[in-house]
Amino acid sequence: MTEEMSLETERPELEESSFKEILKEKYHNAMARYKAQLILLIVFFVVILIIVILTYIPPFNEPDKVYWVEGSRDNFSDPTLQHLLGTDQHGRDYLTRLLHGIRNSLAFGFVTGLICTGLAVLLGIIGPFKGGVTDTSTSFITNIALVFPQIPFILLMSAILKTREWWITMLIIGFFTWPWAARSIRSQVLTLKERNYVKVARMSGLKESKIAFREVLPNVLPYIFLAFIIFLGNAIIIEAGIAIIGLGQQNWLTLGLLLEHAVSWGFIYPRRLYAMWLTPGICLILIYLAFFIIHSSISRTFEQRKV
Image (cartoon, rainbow, N blue to C red):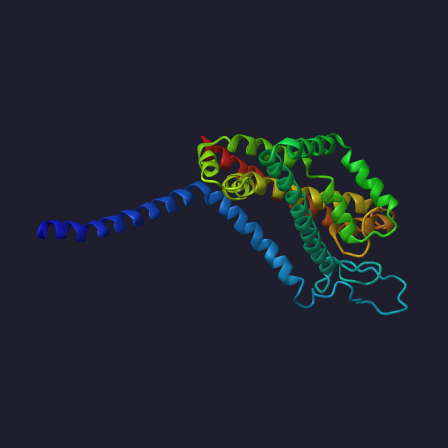
């Protein structure tokens, strides 16, 4: 009896120690595998956080503040210690406006990315699980949207609509750039729905909708996250392209609107104020490049995990 009691008292300690070792091993393996990706994401979000914080701290919290005296013939000023990128034709600090443009462009891309991702997930998951008419309808809608000329239609809608609000531009881009992700998610769901754990869930009596969002959706999250990153970067670039040609929204300061001002107010020619059109252009390139690097890095990690 004493030996049995001693074994029983030792067993929980062994199980507890082995459990801790397993957790420790899992943690070290995850850190070793995703260390580069985590560092990349942390650096990117720290930079974005610094930019966002600066837009709420004086003197960078007033993008429309005028620094020149009324009656002055030339409202532009060259870069100085007080205004690192100079001032525009209204005497407003351009660095302050650039920081607000970066923040608003990222916010625009984030919300538009959520709209696109939500539509792609909804149509890519519900169709395969419901089957029948639902699957046929969602597949038909996705196929039509895939071959639909998205960019020309976005430009046409922007030109036709009289009111050019930021949320209208956001909805136009969000409703016409999602189909490729829905097709990709659908193919993954069709593969996952034949797995054994899904069959067991069906045998237990779970509804198709619960199986889709509880059992299958977590396994598709990596693809959804990658699609969201692409949507985010593309939305920023598309908004900038629409704004540059004068068809975008005019009431929310973004990088695209800064470039449109550079074209319409003659910053490029004849004034040749390089700081006022090169800086927003470079910021757009760096933002898109950062999202591309993050997407490629995380995608490579997921592919290695499969192997």
